Image (cartoon, rainbow, N blue to C red; front, side, top):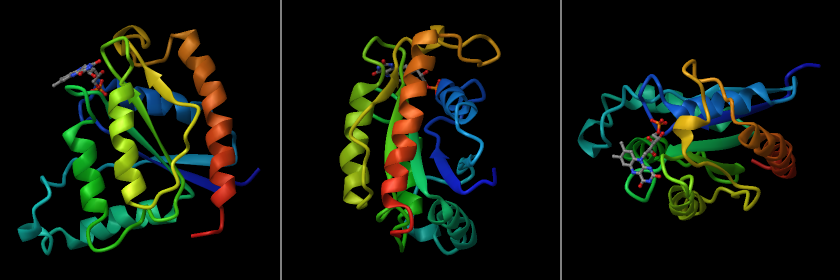
Length: 185
Ligand SMILES: Cc1cc2nc3c(=O)[nH]c(=O)nc-3n(C[C@H](O)[C@H](O)[C@H](O)COP(=O)(O)O)c2cc1C
């Protein structure tokens, strides 16, 4: 079956051993054949600074086009001090410079966290950001991974069957959410 839907994933952590990226890979592995996922890489961008936008304009356009071309957005964030990461907010801020590729584009946030709450606060804090950007946000099901260090093995493969079952429910729900808005932006 040809690929006819594209999801862009916005990671919230840069580190090589990121469990948030491992979660995105596990989601990607669970997608049906006709859906592809691109992980947006924006780690080369500096902290948002209006004084440097001109020198970064080509790069900004590039990441904005990637989001614009997608049918849906998954934002992945670690929980840092009870909220989302600075990196994920920086990426979102650059993406919204001078335009808004989030407008009308269905989105959801997922989280990993060291604690038992699984990054629920990080996700809750991202919700108003994505709503401010006029992205229709999938209210449920949520996908947070508590005690994330024990959900993946040393090769960053998901080993937690409960999390896999939650991904198995999350993926079709999000794809159905994406279909609701397909062709509207
Ligand atoms: C600065 C910092 C703050 C953190 N704050 C929290 C927190 O408030 N709650 C929590 O459950 N985990 C917290 N953690 C743990 C991270 O959420 C966890 O290590 C996560 O796996 C990091 O994401 P990553 O693996 O994608 O890099 C914190 C970690 C760091 C480095």
